[in-house]
Each structure stands twice: as C-alpha cells, then as structure tokens.
Image (cartoon, rainbow, N blue to C red; front, top):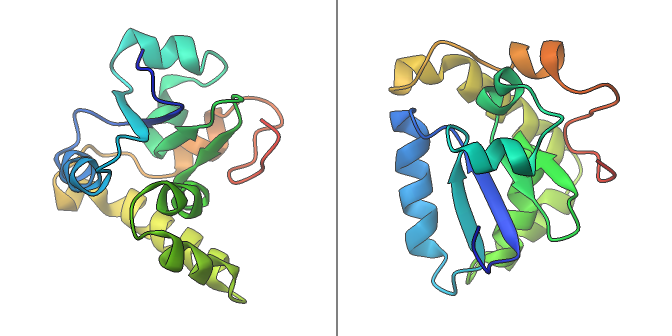
Length: 140
C-alpha cells in the first residue's frame, strides 16, 4: 500500500468512476489519498468484511484508524483532505445537505451504467454489506 494515510477504494472497471478518480487525483495535489481499485487484491485485504457487491455499490474511504465511510458519507472527509476543499466540506453541515448528497449519490450509483459503468447501483450495498454496516456511520 502507499504511505498515505487515507485510501479511497473505487471501481476500477467503471469509466464514470475512473473519470472522477482522475479529477480527484489532480485536485489532491498534496497526495493525501491513496487510490485503490476494488479489483486489486489489496482492497479486499483492507476491507475483508465487505463483499465485492458492497464495494461495487459505492466508493469507500478508509481512514488511518480503519473507520470506513461509503458513498456520499465519504465526501465531507475527502473535501477536508484536498486543497481548497474545506469550504465545500462545511456545506455538509447545513440542514438537509447530507440527506440531499446521499440521495444524489444513490441516484448516480443506480444509474452509473448509463454514464459509462456497470449495471449495479446501491441495492447491493444494503443487501450484501457486513452485519451492522451503515453507510456513513463512523464506527466501522
């Protein structure tokens, strides 16, 4: 793995995901994030309790302490890590912002095959996630 503290696990076979990861890599000028496609065996070693279908359903941000945030719940922390992202991260503290971001993320995830990716949306996340897993909860 990388010496970076934070790891973003994403679908490396999804053209839509690859475009966003490329954008994030350019934005992440300080190199705070390591990027790991879920197809890499190291992703499964990093997140052994997560079935592949859960990893395919959403991006997963793994903190240095192992706390994992999935989907829209990862966005505020990602924004905290990239240069100039903090003001945008503050927007998530506004009433309803996290709810709206989650709904938008799920909508995109369900329809990403229309945007250049595979057929699955967020259904797999709820169906195959490890027992007790709640997207966005901080104690995974």
